[in-house]
Length: 253
Ligand SMILES: NC(=O)c1ccc[n+]([C@@H]2O[C@H](COP(=O)([O-])OP(=O)(O)OC[C@H]3O[C@@H](n4cnc5c(N)ncnc54)[C@H](OP(=O)(O)O)[C@@H]3O)[C@@H](O)[C@H]2O)c1
Image (cartoon, rainbow, N blue to C red; front, side, top):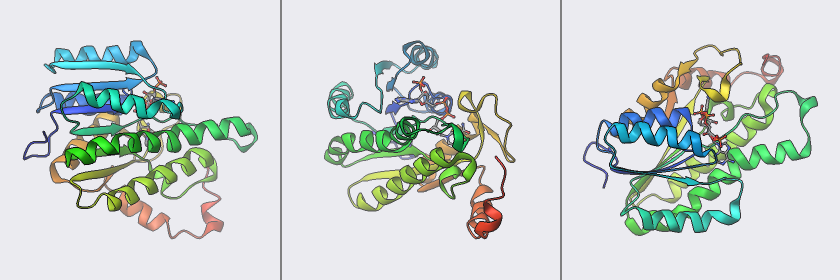
């Protein structure tokens, strides 16, 4: 059950080896977290986060194989997971992957895979859990979007478009679930130094994964529907949305 300060006792994490998810869970472990299901593809990476959570006192940490692009398996996965936890207080959706940046490096297969990994798969996973969450009449879904989806740049066209999709889905879902007791939070980080961005030149206003984790935990406390990390990006993108396209398309990678 989510406590009066918004802190979950149980969590299911999609993309359970994500660095942002790991840092968020470590903070939640210091609060009320007691049971977690980490779902993802890399057993060793999931186990590494699981071991850290157990060392922080989380009583029950389970790791489960899940590839969000395998959409035929998602309903069965959600049902099995719901049976493993008494309730699901938090569904944290962190699965995602950058895609080729250069238009010349894109092909149909790469584009399709990137859209399923960053949009269709995460959205379908959330939908697979909706029956359980709605039956509980409580719970919070936190979806990792990105500022890349707020206004898509040519430099990361496919990733940005997929993030625009998952962001729109999350905002619309929050409206659709109004009054059910299930709430949705959208997280819009800028550049975060994690394994996803290793080797890339940090963008201005780059942050650490621990900064995103702190913002998510604060957002759980306050119940805000949208979290920008760092917060100044909200104002920056309000302005950037108004940039004429002729200037926008000149922004380098
Ligand atoms: N880092 C940034 O600059 C940044 C900025 C804005 C938003 N975000 C978003 O924040 C989220 C977390 O990213 P992160 O920075 O923590 O990077 P990360 O450590 O690389 O985490 C991404 C996670 O997604 C998992 N994943 C990828 N494809 C998957 C699939 N098909 N099925 C299941 N899991 C899959 C990866 O696991 P495996 O590949 O090991 O299976 C990995 O654990 C992502 O949604 C990302 O788009 C990141």
